[in-house]
Image 1: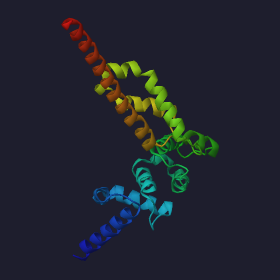
Image 2 (image 1 turned 180 degrees about the horizontal axis):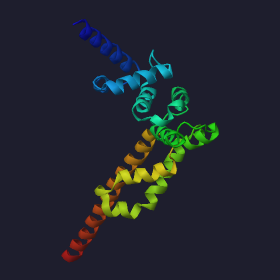
Image 3 (image 1 turned 180 degrees about the vertical axis):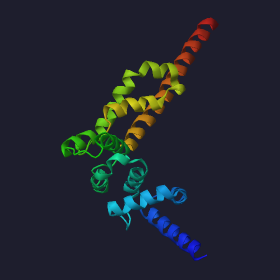
Image 4 (image 1 turned 90 degrees about the vertical axis):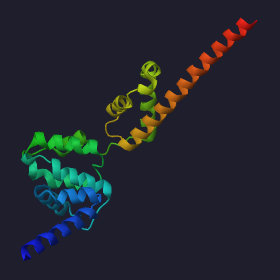
Length: 209
């Protein structure tokens, strides 16, 4: 019985720790059900020095490090965590690039400037730049959007924008790309319907005369 009580206490402590880094309760509970992930995440949290908590954004990135970091490059994990905690790496795209970089580097030495360049560290993409990219992508695909209208693959358009600005904030990219596209589709559809209405009205008027 004492063993079960100790185990229950450990799980409660882990749950509390995981909630402190901003994980939602469901994810935290699912995590403690997996001993391997629990051990990895606990180790990474201590390694990152955020046992007292951190923002949800940082916490989610730390969770990704715990679950996806390449086992052949553990020697470099503290370096990556420093970049995450300091928000030099702050998006999933940057983190994915970092994981790929270390997966290739393994335990070998690497040049910090090459790592930073590969992960877009220090690259700031303004809202205006994202808006410009969205407008350019929309114009380039305008005919397809007109043809497909509500069947337009917005995800594909988002992909075009992300390729132009891979380090842009994905939330801003989504907002700036999805809503204008949907609005434009509705607007263009209304114009088409209105033009057809005017054409038909003119025909009926001429026929009546």
